[in-house]
Image (cartoon, rainbow, N blue to C red; front, side):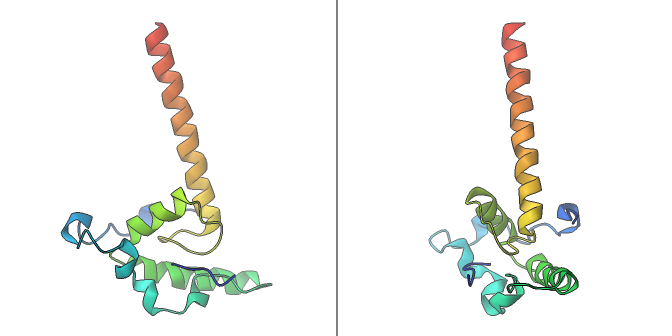
Length: 121
């Protein structure tokens, strides 16, 4: 989702991006093709004091919108690089994005250690 109004990972369950990014107009920003531009922002961002059951239901509905979006991967990477602290972006909730970022950081540390070991050995 583009602008905010104020569980378990399901990354593998999200379908791959439909068309390669290079087939799209390179001058247009990725978000111009986002499916969520046509949906309610409230679907992607929690209202204050939202009950847990309602939040989970809303997030699943938002993820279904993301799953059919041609720029889901670009959206997800944007949210991970920013990092976006709220909402569903690229099919991931804020909590799921924190897990992905933590895994990326761990992998990066492991790669640095492996490289240092090879150089020293």
